[in-house]
Amino acid sequence: MTTAAAFPAPVYRDTVLGPLFENMKRHHWRHLMRVNDAHAVMLAEQGLLTADEAAAILNALEAIETDVASRLDEVGVGSAEEDLFCVIEDDLRRRLGIAVAGRLHTGRSRNDIDHTLFNLALRDKVLALSEALVHLIDGVIAVATRHRDTLVVAYTHGQPAQPTTWGHYLAALIEVLLRDVDRLSQALRMVDQSAMGAAAITTTGFPIDRPRMAELLGFTKVQENTYGCIAAADGTTGVYAALKVMFLNIGRFVQDLNQWAGFEVGQLHVPDTFVQRSSIMPQKRNPVPIEHLRVMCSLGVSCCDGVMLAVHNTPFTDVNDTEHEAQETGYRAFDTAGRVVALLNGFLEVATINTAVVRRHIDQSYITITEVADSLVRAEGISFGQAHSICSWLARHMGEQGETLATVPYAVFAAAFAAAVDRPPGLAEAEFRRIGTPEHFIAVRTHCGGPAPAPMDRSLAGYRDQVEIDRARLADHHRRIEAAAVKLADRVAHWQRTARK
Image (cartoon, rainbow, N blue to C red; front, side):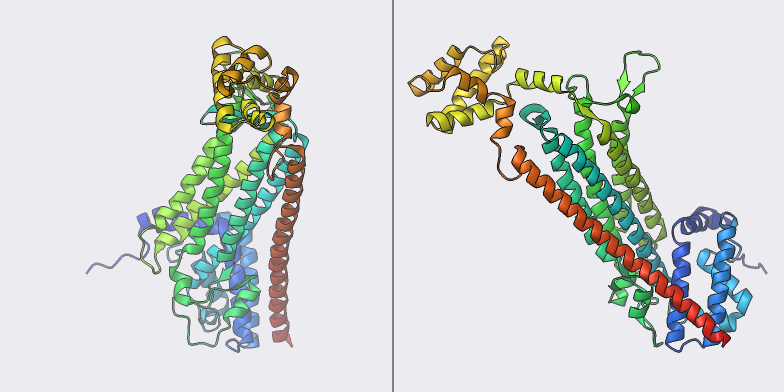
């Protein structure tokens, strides 16, 4: 008769359990110890543990945590221990015996434990990334403020379109990043909920206290429906949806930086500290941080998509597709996001605008001619259609003759105007030259969100206010989490003291 081999099969241990064990050590084991402590405290408060049992379990858990921390690199999958939960449970039984140690698992399951661990880990990661984004926004606001009036060429469809300012352009990025912070904040609300007490999926007949568990773990609330605690994955997917949008937003901005830093455009100057030289071409200045930002954003998107694809078309129940494998893929997205935000912040702090190149491009592309048309409407009382026709003809002429709005003969403009309107322009040459300057173009765009100094100052002030609101909100989260940790430590100590009396 053949004796059945013991679980786990070596190949399963090496390809599944081992990697997942390492993942838990990296991301979840401290959270697991907090969940164990909180559950023991709650059971004691509910009379499901005696004071002596609670003290014994809590003291043993403290010793186990110290022991595991001292040799974490050595802890791995054993012959009968498929994950860190089993290691801790087996250690607890060796120390206390199953009659006492076995009481810790009353009214709970590895299902609600795991989903609580995922929420705790995602909460920490979302908070950390949100803080990094707020710091980045602070830095971009500072750059935009310094360069409120620094001219740049704005592009549409890859072609020079209109002049604006570096500050105004960066303000668009600031608003996008503020919305990214808001999206992460909404995602945070979905994972800042406790699944503990759901047990396997339908809760338990023991008189546990789910709100108390949420309180001790620093969650804002209990995730109510216990089937959803285990089956629903929208908390996880909501986080990675928000994170993916952030990568897309930053990646699109980085694409502009790449174009602007190219030799043919050249309006963005990358300082030597961010330039790698060619090993063979002495003249090359490769702005490789821009390329690294681009590829990191793409890889970050792929990690977010990996989580989404793992969950896609899975049944609405407890399945591995929503658990450790998928979570580990997602955590890599957070690691990448931290690198992206830090690198972008450092790069924008020192990158500069080549103002001479910008001036040349504005002249050569006569992109202020939109305002010339607008000014003709206001000054001459003609329709925009007429003004557009005049300026369109003038742009073609300047392109053919190699002229600019500063050099095209005034008589050429006057003839084009007369041909379209059947009268000479009332606009004098000096005024014609003035309305074609980028300074005038910017100055008259005073509406909300425009690049003129007054709306820019209002926008920047509003961004600063929003940053302070976001910073205060994040600080409130941290204070609540820290207060919960203090409360849990106090209750652990209370039950340890109670048993000694």
